[in-house]
Length: 321
Image 1 (cartoon, one colour):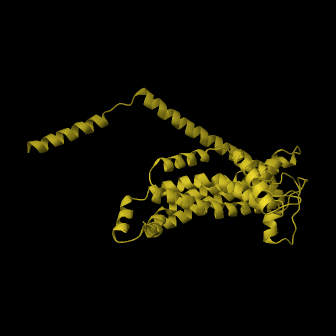
Image 2: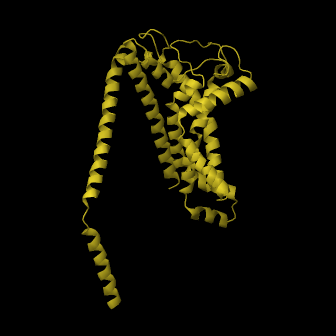
Image 3: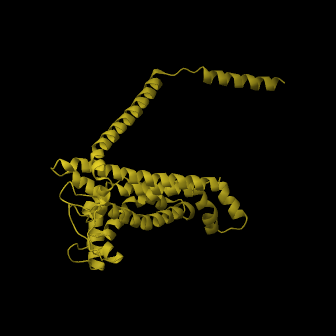
C-alpha cells in the first residue's frame, strides 16, 4: 500500500512540475519569431500569386485557351506555349523512366542489401551532397556527357541541332533529380517497421520476396510523395536545360511528319520554364502579361500533378492500413 502511495505521489509531483513550468522569455521570443516568419511567408506568397494571376487575366480573357495551344511567335499577340508544354512533358517522361527505377533500385540496395560500413556511409554522404549541387553544374555535366559524347559521339546526332535534343535534356534532368529520388526512397524504406521484415523472413520468404511483397507496398505512398518532389523539381528547371540544348528562341519549327524517334533525337525542343524566362527578357510590354500567364499554366500543371499524387497516396495508404 505504501509503495502504491509513493508511486502516486511521484506521479503527481511530475505532473505538477510539468504543468507548472514557466516558459522562459527566450522560448516565447523564439515562438513569436517563428510564427511571424510563417505568417510573413504566407502573406508574401499570396501577394505574389495574386499579382501574377491579375497580370495573367487579360491574356486568358482575350485569347482563352488559344494561348495554351498556339506555337511560339515573335509577336506577343500570337505567341503561345504549346511547344513548351509538349517539351516539358517529354522531358518529364524521360525523368520518370530513368530516375524512378534507378532511384528506387539504388535505395533498396543501400537499405536492404548493403552492409553498414565505411563504403556505404561514404556513398550515402555523397548522395546527400549531390542533392544540394546547383543545377547549373548538372547542366555542364549534361552538355559534356549527354550532348557532346552520348548523343554527338556515340549516336552521331549531327546536323542543325547536333546532340541538343530531348534525350540529352531528359537524361540531364534525370541525373539532376536522381539523388533526391534515392534519398526520399531510402527514408521511406527506413520508416517500414523492422518487425515486418522479421515476420516475413521467419515464415520462409526470401529477402527479395520480403522486399517485393511487403516492404515496397508499405513504403510506396512515401515513395510516391518523393517522386512528386522530383517531378516538381525537374518541371521547374531552366538553367540545366539551357546548357543541355533547349531552344532559347521565340520561333523554331518542328517537322509535322516526324516520327517519335525523330522528335526526340533530331528535332529542336524547348520547355515551359525556358519559355517563361524568354518571355520575361523581351522588351515589348505585351510579353509581361504572357510571362504571367505562362507562370499560371506552370503552377496549374504542378498543382494537378501534386493533387493526383496525393489521391494515389491516400488510396495506397487505405489499402495497406
